[in-house]
Image 1 (cartoon, rainbow over the protein chains, first blue to last red):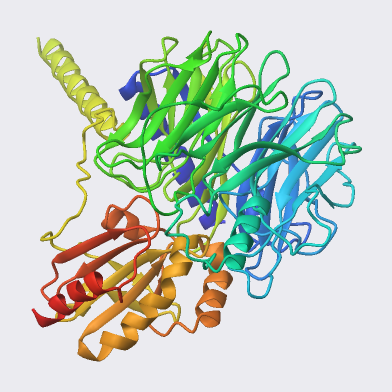
Image 2 (tube, rainbow over the protein chains, first blue to last red; image 1 turned 120 degrees about the vertical axis):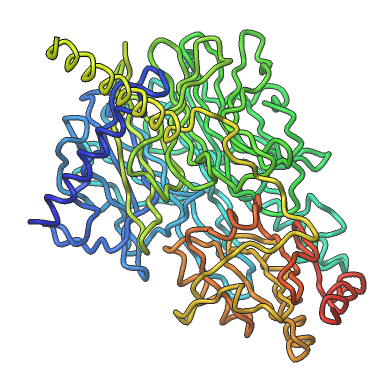
Length: 443
Length: 184
């Protein structure tokens, strides 16, 4: 009881501090409340073993307005995917339901964590599993999918959506983004290893060691493929679609729906000059060449493991937030494409000579202002920072979310016209825990 | 009169309190975007203090390794170049370990990936020291951006060289750097 009271006391203190922070920065956030997630603190009433929880995904049910949360939980040996929903913006939650029908059919992944999509009458979850293949450098993975038509109470048996399953060794299908396209379209796009594996096989056949790609810096690039359903996931088109080659192979894809129903993807492209910068492209039409969001020219000969966040407003303007590690300007950036589709000068939300890899997500307030969440603290320590970008796209006001030290991969979601939820994985104290806060904006 | 003085004293204290609160709020919230410098580490810099747990559960501190040359490799199981360079790091450990080179691999895999780190180390026969730095403290201490990055630290605790991306310590140029560090 004393510990619980102490915890409540510290949360109250955090709320007071939050008020001071908000006042100090003069932004439009007027309140930050830590949301209690009773099911992520040890074994819960339903008897679920939740020693660790990680990789959260958020959505709002468009029919009820309920907040829906999915996450991965397990004991270090086996991992499963769970879901709960809240009808009161996180004040109370339903008992968790396990989504995956096959035991342990998911792995904690961080950058390739589950994606939750809420459409009218349907909740859809997309995740990657882990397939150990002897002799393969990386574990392979399937692009798994299940859906619920009763609000998350029951789920269909999971299926795999990639079409390269016959006559080949398992490959990688992960780092995915997913979205509802309006009407009855569902799309999931992922970084696919089929072309990379084919290139490496060809190199091996030609006598070049496919595992050592120093002669071709693009030998390890991935390709974006996507799967589409036109009946909200009841069935899927038989063949996958190829969207873009030359992708950084280990950074997640962001995806967002425009006002016309078109879906837009953002990802870290491996440009011919060696840069690993952010690009966007409409998904279902695949029209034109990828649009470069900014010329960061981050030529990193390794693994960034950090993809962008994307949102599209009611006027069709694309907003993107991302991390770059380019020395001299490493940090978190925001850019917006107006009218003609070209992106304006990026706004540096945090810029340093160097900075450890961090992660950014983005959501929009109904008035069109962008809100960026990232985990790049001023002193280099990971903490959730929420930045409200001004209507001109040139200024931002920041709020540090109290109690968010050790945060990894914050995700944002607009709940209504003045409330957003931010959820992240807490990697402090020798455990992993999903955490959430609710932020209120001045109207 | 006394009442008026008390009133103004109270107001002054209130104003001072508000100013202090506002100042602390500004500092805590980090409105000043230039509060911290993050200059990249380079040759000649003192290696930062760094302590992390090993897979066996004990801890290794760079300070405790003073007097040895250290090859500190920042890596992760999900990183292809990291996995490719591991055999060469193991070869460096075998080649120069008796001469005073301490090869240390700091995995920044998250806590939930611990079993994958164990499996990788076992599958690849790695016998040099592997740290599991799930909080990625090494990336902040050494101001790295991604993985892999590797630092050669001299016996006196200064940074001798930094490699960004995959490298081969047994390749002639890199081997010469390591030998030179061992001879100092």
